[in-house]
Amino acid sequence: MSTIYIISDWGRLVKSGEVLQLKKENDILKTIFPFKTEQLVVIGQIEITAAAMRFLMRHQIDTIFLGSNGRFNGRIDFQTGKNVFLRVKQYELLKDEDFKLKLSKSIVAGKLKNQLVFMQRIKRTRFLENEINKTIEEMKINIRKAENAENIDSLRGYEGNGARLFFSVFRHSIIQDWAEFRGRSMHPPKDNVNAVLSFLYTMIMFRVDAALSSQQIDSYAGYFHTLDYGKKSLVYDLMEEYRTPICDTLTVSMFNLGILNPDDFREEFFDETSEKNPLYEERNEDETQTGLFQSVKGVLLSKKGLKKVITHLEKRLDDQIFYEPTMEKITYRKLIDEQVKHFRRVMTGEEAVYKPLAIK
Image (cartoon, rainbow, N blue to C red; front, side, top):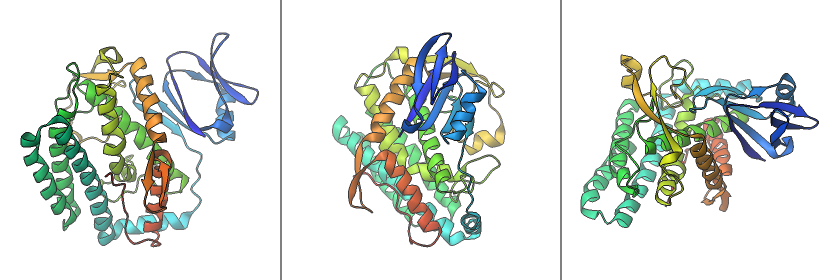
């Protein structure tokens, strides 16, 4: 079972016997077999026939629709979430300040420690010991503060400070002269490195969301990220541990190994009301409150670039990592599912502490 991607602005997805086919006039561009497909991601503006939609529903294939720029347009989710008692428990814990703080500290400390490991790797490989040492020491202090935070508001401050420290060092990891990274930017990404980071974060977000849905857990009821209408706070909570091990490291590899090149990106102007604006990531608090979003130039992956990034993301998800709870090697793909199951056991009281993925 795997994720199948369709990247196209033309063609029709039709049912043909017991398979789906993407067609352009009489040409068959892609054939999708239901027994091989766990998830379908459609990027672009293809037509889907009613028979094809019924086919997706009958085989319960999780289907995600993105615009050509990566903007989330919708999702067909077939997990019905019949376990009302699990949902009640999840909602009750929203009022349990001790649980929320304990879980949030695990999530943030795990993310920061993964970022620290990556920073230390950059120091060793780029011979920037003097320049990076101070920032690494600041990150260590920041982690200790996060582990001892007395409330979630202060914890959010340490998480934000950690991001600032991390990306100040991250920029040294890219060796290609043509690659640009002027600090983290989104809504839209303002350079090519941010375009890749944002798209990868989005893909991991959907995978965590699907894993939560399979366990009948409400993606909107999170404990660290603030609650808001239409915001999948729990997805943001549980994807934090994967940002560096999967997305940040993969981004650096694709630039430094010459997998990506300038032709894999395109520039476009965006404004607040534009449907082309790629709002697939959580907005910063200042963006949400001020609403002072002006027309800006953004950088996005081209179709060719999208295909490259998706191909290497799928390869990355199939890489194996030692999973301590089961004392075996498993793929990142399976690890995401196992971590959601682990979270569910913590939520129901079967396990005491949530332990995020930790890279060595």
